[in-house]
Length: 60
Image (cartoon, rainbow, N blue to C red; front, side):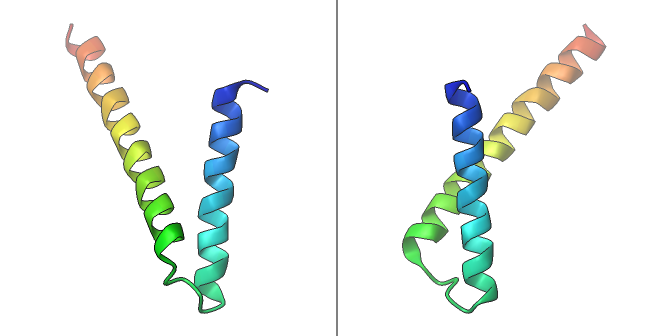
């Protein structure tokens, strides 16, 4: 596996751990909250970049 694939799998694992902790009432963990917030921010930024690229390809 490449580094990127391992990073994506690790991030998904952290999000699933956070979800499981929330389900069982332990979701107010500062470390997990920070990790999940960073992961989701990176994902949103990546999707925005891809959207802008698609718009430039469509218009250009």
